[in-house]
Each structure stands twice: as C-alpha cells, then as structure tokens.
Image 1: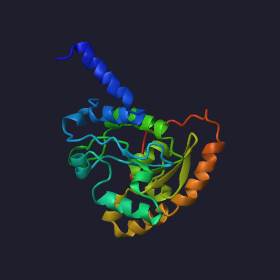
Image 2: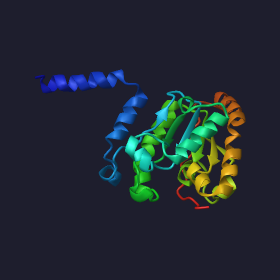
Image 3: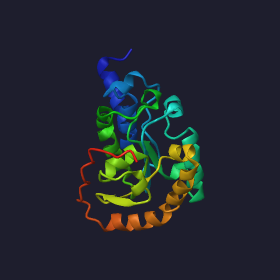
Length: 223
C-alpha cells in the first residue's frame, strides 16, 4: 500500500500528463460550486477540437446530456450535427460547450448564482481553445456577449466583438425544433458561418492581443 505522500504524487503526475483543457474538464466533472451538483447525474464540460476556430456555446445540458456527460447529444444536437455537415464540418472540428455545465432540474432556466458559478469555467475554456468565432446558441449564451436591451428576434444573425473574438448570435437548435418557422431562420444564420469565420480569423490576427473582452451584460431580454 502506498503512503499518503505517494498517493498525492501519483495524482500530481496524472494531472501533469493532462493538457490544460482536460484539467479544466476534470474540475467541472467534480464541481461543487452550486446546488446543481446535488441533482446532476453527469456534469457536461464540453468537447471537441483543442484549438478550434469555432466554439459553439449553448445554454445548459438537457436530459440526454446529463445522462451521457456530453453536450448536444439529444434531438437539438442531431440538428446541430446536420447543419455542421451542411457547411462541411463535423463535431470534431469545433468545440461545443454551454454556459451552464450541469442540468437544471426539469430543464428550468438557469439561475443567476448558477451562471455565476460556471462563469470562470467558460472564460477559461475561451482562453484555452482560443476560437476565432463564437456562435451563441440561445438567449442565455447570447446574453454573455451581446449588449442588453434587445432580444433574439433582433440580434440573431448579427455579430459583436468579444476582445479579439467575433461572436455570432443564433437561436438555440431546440427552439428551431419547437417552432417550424424558426428552423429556416436557424439554417440561414448557420450558413453565414463560413464567410464569418474567414473575416473573424483576419480580425483576430490583426487585433492587439492585449485587447480585453468587455464585461458581460447583467440582464437579458426573453425575445
């Protein structure tokens, strides 16, 4: 049987063998920062390319994500996969995560303290993945990057800068599945991604690396 010192050393060696994103993901999986740790089955850190040019950020895990510990694996995820294929991409080419890393009971809306508990995780993911383009999926994701006062109806398909990164607002794919009229809107916005990525990459490379992202807005509009 090893000593306590040896056990600690073993854990340190294992941690050293992980990349920084894997370390973060392991922290998320055992996170105790808010009440959701008491009701989750699996925390859902995110997955995808370690240095992805595009990062998709949804709102929170749902039923299937909570079961599997992976983001966007339910019906909304299938639609996301279909549209990625439409523009010549696969999940492995991008990084996918949520603003909230654990499922709220009954898929209720995230609460302010829960969003605050996950804020640092998302910021670290953005720094480590270093995307050129962030695609926000849904209003809670959009609210982190876009100014308050206007809702999804006005902002979908539009962009803002977050430091050196370009952010594109889109409806959540689950909303597109619930409302047939939104599916065409969602697809049209999705088709903007290839051209936006090209310009976002040029803007990222031309920007001063010292540019600091703006503070996240405090309130969001439902529509």
